[in-house]
Image (tube, rainbow, N blue to C red; front, side, top):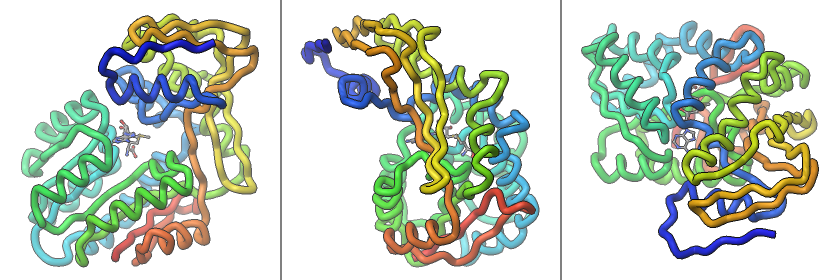
Length: 321
Ligand SMILES: C[S@@+](CC[C@H](N)C(=O)[O-])C[C@H]1O[C@@H](n2cnc3c(N)ncnc32)[C@H](O)[C@@H]1O
C-alpha cells in the first residue's frame, strides 16, 4: 500500500523519490548519490584497485594532453565547461597544460553537488591561481542552457568519467542532441566512454570486496532518511550488480531482503517492499566504436578524433558539429 498527500511543495529530489518509489519496478536516479557522504565515498571508489575507469582516463589525458590542448586552443578565448566535474583531478592535467601554454580560457565546472563544487573551486584557487574559475551548481542541462544564454564565447565541453553511461541510450541521445543544439560551429565536446571488456572486470569494478560500492549505493537510502525524515533500515537492503555483455549494460540495484514498510514522514509516504523487491539505482553503460558512432549519428554530432589508454579499456572521443 502506498499513500501520499501532495499538499506541500516538493523539491525535485522529493518529487523523484515519490515517483520512483511508487512506480513498478521501483527506481531512483543515480544523480542523488552525491551528497557530502556520497562524494567522499566516490573518492574512495576512485582509489579502489578494481575501479579502473579513473586511472585509465587519467592515463589518456596525461599521454595526449598536448594534442588535446591543441584541439581546444583552436581560435582565441574559450570557456572550458565541465559537466559533472566532481573532484576535477583528471581535468587538472589539462588545466595545468592550458595554463603552461598561456591559453586564454575560463574553467566552468558544473556539478549538482555543491560540496564537490566548493572543494574543487577552493583547491584550484590554491593550486592554480592563474586559472579563472566560474563554477555553476546545478544539473548538466540547466547549467548548459544558462551558460549559452550568458555569452556566445566558444565552448569546449568536457564530460568525463563515462558519466554518459549513467544515461540509457534514449536519454543519452536526447542529452547529446540538447548539447548539439547549444553548440556553435567551432565548439567541441570531449566525452569519456568506458569500453566493453571482460565482463568479470566490469562486475568487479562495481562490486568490490570491501563493500565501498555497496555503501555508496545504500547511501541514497540514508540521504532519503535524512532529508525526508524516513526510516529505511539500510541493513535490510543488499547492493546487487549485474552486467549484460550482450548489450554492455551494467545495472546497480538495492534489493529488499524482507517484506517491509518504510515511512517517509516529511512526504507522508508509506512504501511497501515485497521480499526481494528491487530499487534500480544506476545504469553504467559500456560501449564500443560502433555504439559511439551510432550515438553520435543519432545526435547529429561528428567524431573528430579519439584517444585510448594502453589496454583499450577506456576511450575519449572528440565530437564537433
Ligand atoms: C561519477 S562522478 C564523476 C566525476 C568526474 N567527472 C570524474 O570523471 O571523476 C559524477 C559527478 O557528476 C555529478 N553529477 C551526477 N549527475 C549529475 C547531473 N545530472 N547534473 C550535474 N552533475 C551531476 C556528481 O555530483 C559527481 O560529481
